[in-house]
Image (tube, rainbow, N blue to C red; front, side, top):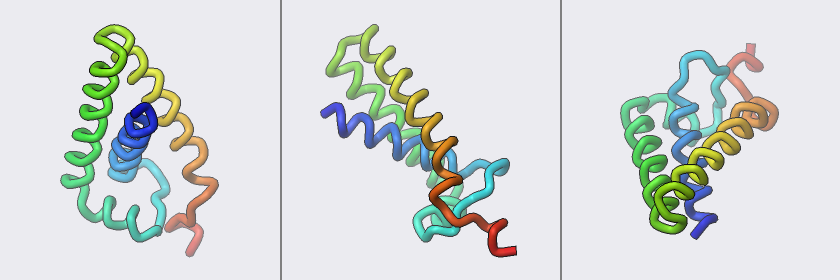
Amino acid sequence: MIFSITLLTFLGFYCLYNTSKRVKLSTAPKSVWLQKHPTSSKVLGSISLVLSLVLSIAIFGLGAGIFTALILLMTIGSLIVLLFPLFTKTNASKS
């Protein structure tokens, strides 16, 4: 169950990350779809993050669930921001 919470947090942050205007975005097919449909991406990302928070609260309780969800969000968020540019081809590399 913790793996599914982690996966939902990753999916939510990744969807919201791909709607950013400040990032060099990837040309992978899934990322391109997320970039072309920003409203759907924001809704999907927000629902995933809220669902992971609710599941975390259901498993760990109110206080520990919120704390766990925040720590998980910070960890996954920093990993995506740091490692995402290293493993993807960007639009700027084609120039």
